[in-house]
Length: 177
Length: 75
Image (tube, rainbow over all chains, first blue to last red; front, side, top):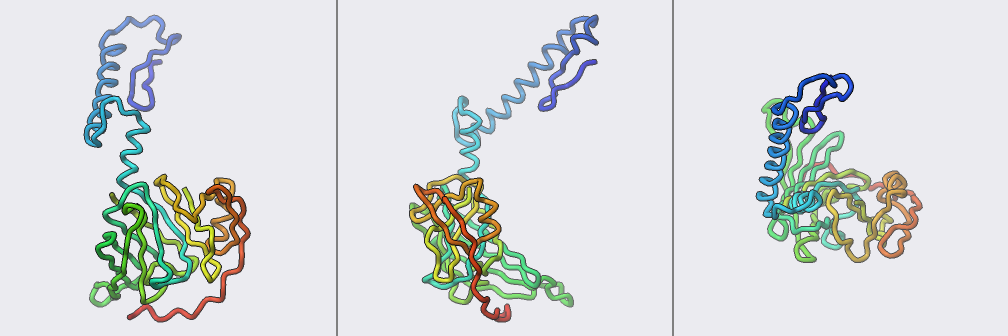
């Protein structure tokens, strides 16, 4: 019995079960060529969007994509202040970093535009039930860069929580270049 | 990749980062190899770390210091 390939649905005949079928140029050949060509067209459009040549390999495409967005995590060390900065390093100079932390009783988020500004937002896990508004506060953080902007450091003078660095807590971030 | 700062902070913790990105490891930091990732994840961030040529070669978990009482989360 005929089947379709799993990735782009190319039509395949079973050489035993379909051995007596007539050869159909449309289904057995041309539709498959069209599917392959369409798939290559999508890749070509992606290469163009990333500023790559049409001969760029899949590895080069992935590198170009990864060079613009990175995600990850770190474990807090329980320190804060200008002498105890946190830092994240990338293969590119990020333009925006967002860090989040959730704990049982509160949630924190920090938004950083490296070297320009940073601020954090805190809210309790329930918010303010009466007004349906965030029940929390906003604070400023100080950030700086080194290594051509690829390493971003920051600190808060207020405390470990506000530096997004409570000991043992998991923090998750995304950086966009 | 997961990297850690080789030298511990005064409280015994090591700054660290796990990332989908692949980049040049900063001076003073080292890559945690796959065979030590589980050990690091259990210990993080408190451990004695040894490294050679930019790669972590040993992780010995240590006890975290006594936590200081957390202030109320309102400033």
